[in-house]
Length: 299
Image (cartoon, rainbow, N blue to C red; front, side):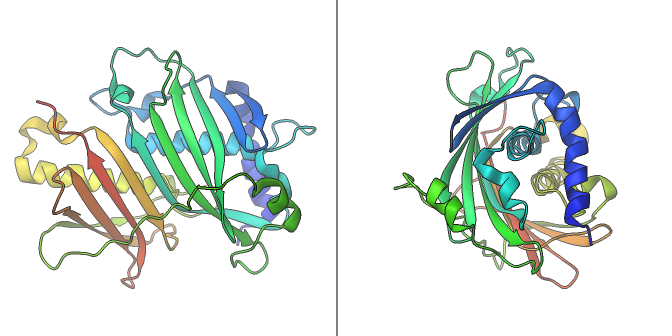
């Protein structure tokens, strides 16, 4: 089992690289701005020059890592996460992202990404953040992500309530905001479009040695492209790489190195651009569910 000290050291190694490309500003106790000067890297783009949807999740993770951890020994952290980390791990349980059409504008130059992260809800053992991504010069966000995280006690590995002082400081003036609720899927008796099996590879893991949360978006997109190529043939591969309008993922169980995962995909009955996915382990337990909604196909 990975120790808390080892996890901390791994994050430090990553932050040493990030802080050279990052500036951050505490706008309030519950609102932080992070500017990532490097922007989206080369590998974030697909063959059509569009940013892959899972790369958005990776950029949100850059914001989380840069705000939840100290960049210098005397620094403080967003939401006092350094204090929460003393007794807790933080696991992501749900995420959803809306993507503006302007995100796919080829005329936009490579530029820094400005991210605004806000605490919008506190639950019994969880909290939800909204992260808005802006390109340089844009007045409106090109993406909006909401992610719900749960505190897990380091010793018991069970959900843990935040300390009273933290709740008194942060669980205020959040009236009207709701927890992130993503409905569970119901696999249709007929109409399943594809069933694939993958094996978790070394490149899929994060510092917890579990499948990184961004990869479930990648697995979903890959499954859709595989289906589209098999259905329409390989003569027009770029057409299968459709622009994502929004996506969401529920995380229920972990997937580890060398695990086999079965992926079931089907189309929503009321929305021809919406595709749903269910991930099961070798015991047939559901470990994750996701959905991708696409913009209409390019002509």
